[in-house]
Image: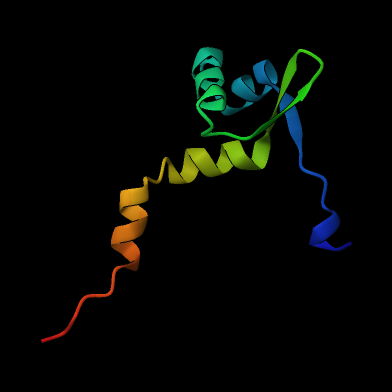
Amino acid sequence: MNNINKIPTVRPLKGAAELAGIAKYALRQWVLNGKVRYVKAGNKILVIMDSLIEFLTIGEVTRKEIENETKIRKVQ
């Protein structure tokens, strides 16, 4: 099976929070602030688990950190 057709694993907010061992409130804030991706199904929030795992392992990357990593400085 191609990775192109991979269906992401999703969990309800409460289940994702319990599985990750974090507070449901904290996860809800991350979702609402755009730090963790999700899908809405009716009035339910389904957390995309790959996004949550990535956020928990890497953390929040700021634009400034990205710019600092990609800067090329002139060698004298």
